[in-house]
Amino acid sequence: QVQLVESGGGVVQPGRSLRLSCAASGFTFRNHAMYWVRQAPGKGLEWVAVISSDGSKKYYADSVTGRLTISRDNSKNTLYLQINSLRADDTAVYHCAKGGGGVISSVDYWGQGTLVTVSS
Amino acid sequence: DIQMTQSPSSLSASVGDRVTITCRASQGISSWLAWYQQKPEKAPKSLIYAASTLHSGVPSRFSANGSGTDFTLTISSLQPEDFATYYCQQYNNYPLTFGPGTKVDIK
Image 1 (tube, rainbow over the protein chains, first blue to last red):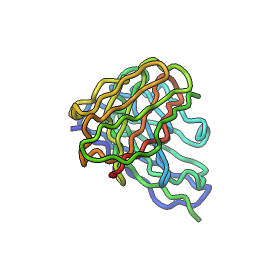
Image 2: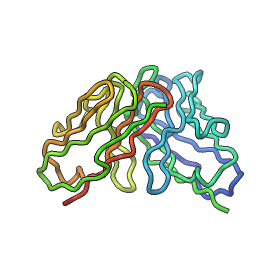
Image 3: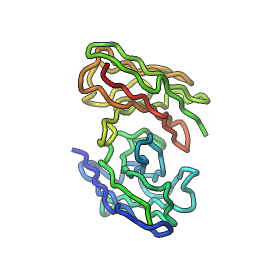
């Protein structure tokens, strides 16, 4: 079965950097676009970034462009999200998610998420 | 960017009720719409893609339709496990955008 397990979250001071990881299993990772979606405490879902199956195409939400970098290692079945210059409004649960297929797709599976708290 | 709205923002219903949630896109998105269910402290679960296609394992009491700008999600007979927040999302183009959510709770 599909499993997506995020790690790397924690409490971080404003201005610092963090790298989140998502270990994928149960499907052919290299064949699927992958997403990061975040959810601030008590708020709705916010799409953050997507990377194509081969890593050649990346798109970001306007709110994070320039500070976040999505990447993947298909040899390790792992997705990453580098967050720089962390701000208080980056505090959220970050979910890794699998694309259903196609150039642009909905999500078909979600990870449980990893909590990032930005606080001094 | 395409803005997604949902109505109502919340509703109270009883087990067995028929419930309908509406989602509207600020511009046409063909059928590139998904619905997700999220329970408190849990990851979202994918219910519907392509506006009306149920993901594998989703109970048949869930149905959805629409195209262009107006979409609906219907639960034909609400079950205890259906009390949750429901989000629509467009994937017609980037940036992908979600609706604000509709919370369904127990009357």
